[in-house]
Image (cartoon, rainbow, N blue to C red):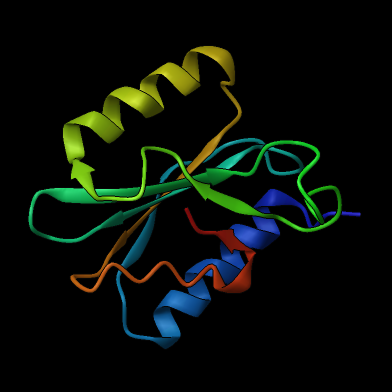
Length: 115
């Protein structure tokens, strides 16, 4: 069974805080099962966007797994905003968390499936 979205986001914010990295909830979704997107703002006009891994990926049924939504390289922030707006059209219950880190660290650990 997966941890509720609201609990996961709270723990993630505390993890970022422990590293002295600013992180905020940009959009609050469904507390129980809303999809979560993590935007890493590199403070140079680019972002890396992580979202839920596709269903069927090993371990995704019980643990949150992450994939880069817009490819391996950072993209301009407007491109990420457009992507998230499209996702909101399909799922109004999603969460958006924004992290500011010049180094581009995502703090998702081994649950991030890299390209």
